[in-house]
Length: 622
Image (cartoon, rainbow, N blue to C red; front, side):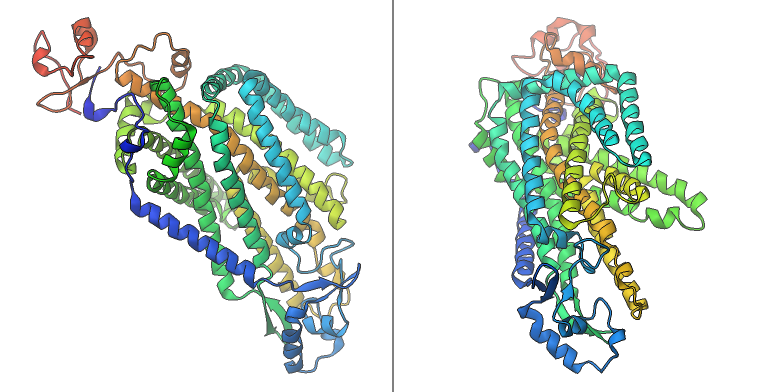
């Protein structure tokens, strides 16, 4: 086929400073304002946050000096109440007793109003230690993949099985032991059934590793991006954890209680949105750096940009386009969240037999739309890096390029993605269990393997498996679950204040440790996924480079990557292609019918219609 110049691009990367111009500037400004507001809101919460309680001794917490005057004033204005009327949230009874006992949730060290962010504040060494371990493991995994791609891919599958076998052996509960062994057997069975796909994925990842080996400075360059990613995640946790201590003493239901001001909830929502946008933008910056270096190496290895130039281009002239692409990804992510959020209402309602199948279809549809949008934005970003075109121009052109070589223009190597994603998934599961055990030990709870209730353990396993696989979505689910459970316990206190058995009214010892561990696991999964995406980005860049080379009639017969591309589902076996210009518009011409004369004329200049013999030439106007 012959491809019009307007339908494709030249096989080169315009990375030089003089060839780059700022694109989609409005979106760069919008993101800058959004992130500035994220920092302002977050640090406002931190600055206004004051400890509600301070340690009196090993067994008591007392109202802090910052809030003591407000509590005394509120209690002085409260009508006289019988002492039996006091309940957990009543600050006056705590003030009168000189403090409150630590560990009111069962035999644990959790108190009646503790949530996951209270656990982070009271035991910061856990989240710091676990995330340090995560970053170290992620870097080690990247180094091992770089030097031992195929063995590590296969070893990762064995590690998956080993993790669940180890958990099963060390389980003290028969139900949890059986569940772990069933999962291990399932993974082994899948690996045997899909062994050919695993070997293909190993070959594809090896090709990615070869590109990274030829450009060893990619990883040091992406370290800066990784540090920003880690800092951004740390700020997100800090803002939420400190924000819970931004409270006011309010008179409510004849008692004085701590309550978050209404404006703080709106700040939390905005911080969540800004964090999601900045996280996805970080992923686009990583993709742009990889596309700049790997694309140049693929097209013209003698003229590659230094890694510093790639990072600078991504953070300056390309930041507007990357901001727009990441915002579109935010919308797709949010749409998927909206379709999945009300599942408990649909599945537990009276019309569940009809509503549940429809909701499952909606979830599948949302996941497909999300995957398709993310795929298109990814390839649009890659072409933007190659050409410097704005997002819309890159998107239109990349769809035309991909449609010529892949059915429907949809290309993604799911096997390699599955192997790397599942590898990150299993590592994150291990990190989650380490955090879970640490929280259990620190707060004297028994919710992990060997705990008192196997049903709770299995429930947390299922919740954790789902949330870890969707880490960003999972963090929001955990935050919502944390807020819901705290509100639910408060409603029980309001309904039954006169109960003498108050310790049974607080259930933090059942849910705070596992949910806090799952939240940390979601952060770990994000880190591991970031590393895995470097290799997947390289594969995607290679796909587009291959398609552009085919459009430009580059001989790829000796290219090992061509063999792998042709094995990808949806690949279109096209004949050689060359650029053509004509008065009647874009023309496609069968070069096999007219021999090599047309092809040998390509390097000199585009072929004109008058040069094509014999006539008439069959053509299609797209």
